[in-house]
Image (cartoon, rainbow, N blue to C red):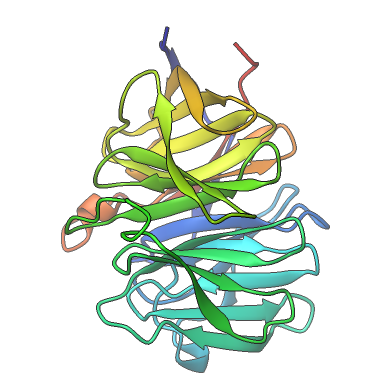
Length: 292
């Protein structure tokens, strides 16, 4: 049974700027700092792991970066930023702030959306418009087409398709959300076999960014302004939606990340692009719920 729960913000981090439209978030496990990217202009923000104000880490436009969707930090202290509609993927050394690699999808239209790391540090990347799961090895040698999703049986209508991505509970597969269909997919790292994750609710419309701890998958449900809590089977082939979390401070959220015993939720307000968003743009922290 899915339980509706109302939660409150423990902390609120204001992002400087009037048209930020932040999209994703990644946490540096070494420091607890989180990094957030602006979909509208490519600015990267640092949200301190301890108390403090969010700050600009890298201004939009630097190095030709004009948009940032997915943001993740790997175990080597490198910041990976998916370039959204730019069709790019950038990698930065966090200590020096130097860009160490740039990759281009080479197809249009493109929307490089999110990424997750395999056990060996390989990055797996979703492009919401290109029906291919991409891969970049830890040596940063090249971006390659890894899985043909349509050829693997995934329907691919117009709109935002593959979006959030995480490494599954057993460390041997990936779990991806497909936003426009509300469906989830399992990709085996060894065989590259793609199969649907069967939820007890059938579909979960407007599914977006993902985070995972053990067998608990957290799914941002953007237009419904909810955070879904899903208990996955160990093999990742099925799951139960156990809770839907709501918060009065949610504002079209698109991403979630784990930070100790908190969940950091990004309020993207993408529904207000071209309109009047609530200012300031924020990232909020909520308590990670107890297992049900």
